[in-house]
Amino acid sequence: MMRTIENLSLQKKVLLIVLSAGLVGCLAMMVASPARAKLEFFSPEYVAEIQQTHIGVVLTEQTGAEEVSRVVSGDDQLIQDQAALLGEDLDEGVQFDKMYPERLSVKNVSDDMDEYVRLTVRKYWATAAPLASVSADDMGLATIAAVEEPTSSDEDAVSDAMEKAAELSQPKKDTSLNPAHIALEFDGNNEGDWVFSAEESTDERLVFYYKQVLKAGEEAASPAVTGIAVSSSLREDPAAANGAYANCYLGLAAQVDSVQVNNAVDAAKSAWGVDVTQFEQYGLNWTDEN
Amino acid sequence: MKRTIAKRLGAILALAIACSLFAVAGTAFAYYTDTSRATGTLSFAYEPDEPHTDIEETPDKLGKVIRVQNTANVREGVPALVRVKVIYPNIEGVNVTITAEDGWAIQEGNEPTSTDGDNAGWLYFTSPVDPQEFTSQIKVDVDIPNADVVKQDFDIIVLQQCTSVSSNSDGSSVAGNFAGLMVSMDSLKAFDRYEHITVASGEGE
Image 1 (cartoon, one colour):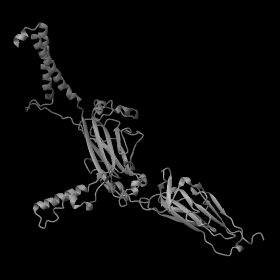
Image 2 (spheres, rainbow over the protein chains, first blue to last red; image 1 turned 45 degrees about the horizontal axis):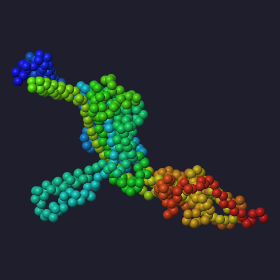
Image 3 (cartoon, chains in turn red, purple; image 1 turned 90 degrees about the horizontal axis):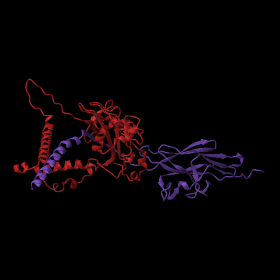
Image 4 (cartoon, each protein chain N blue to C red; image 1 turned 90 degrees about the vertical axis):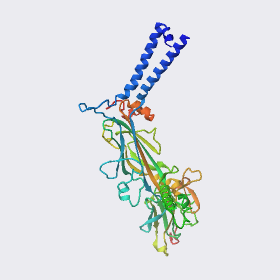
């Protein structure tokens, strides 16, 4: 091997030396890169402060006459305060064409990073089997019913069956019911703080982009969605005459996504597949941290 | 042979450099992003009622002014199609005039005479009436030029029927099934006035 190298021309030796040096340099970069965020040593004389950069965003909801918004996250968290939402209609239920105040917004919960945000709201109908209608077969109880002296395993089975019954009675999205009958109130003219993306929106899904940068720790200047209603168009739906809406649930699902402010246009394109520059005509400005 | 080894060595080094550069550059493709979700449901129930309507009659001299209200509950009620028939006496010396505001129509050839066949003489309100809303008015005027020649009592009777809104067979217009008769609102002729004039036997003598 050494002899082979010795027999090479000077030009080739130089080339090999350069390539070897390059490889060593690259490997050194790979090792050094993560070391930037690594505490090298600690002593009483020197204190190194390390700050972990974090970007964070949450949804906020303000229902009915509530004066301040609340952070909401997870299942069964939106439109849970029916008394606040429906007010005087709590006993009679949702009235057609009446807009109930339901404000959906976002908040930057980062300690130190500004961000740009997108809000996606889905509206849908859900149905559930009434608890009383869940059969013993559904719950897996058929084989236990005949047991006269239940053992602990039988009791566990009953407990499991009750959990299963509760699960079966949970509302589940019903795509046979028309989400167009659910109306959300928002600024469709894009005159406020949000841009409504008509191209990405459907009868079921509405997509909004916050026009400006959302500073660390701050909530959006105004909510993207301000109200929810059930349209009287539902009464003309043939399915309604057949009782399809006789026992159902109005469902709402919201998701907020955020991206960093540096190279935000590229970041949005990479993370969401959306070219946000198309919304610049409506006042969206994600090209600079403003 | 030596050249081949040198070439292979060079190629391996070049590949190693490329791989290490790619590994370093790869970290630059990551962006800071975050996501948060929430869901919720609200109980909702809608069981439509059958349409319910009622006549509102206001006396006007010897005649009356009529309109029909959809009396269904605003939330559970459904829009109703309405038809009205005015039954009046055919008595010599009693003249009856029926005048309707906009929105009323008749079937061609079925004038609002006093004949009481099942589907004869009905006036149809062509727009569906929403719960708690009214039709426009129908005015029935009774004129007795010579009271001396009219010796008997009489009544002006108003009948009304309603049905839910449906479409005609091709789905092109609003229609209603009135007592088994499917009536398309587009097929009706606008109605505004009908006069039933009689001549008393004593007149002109």
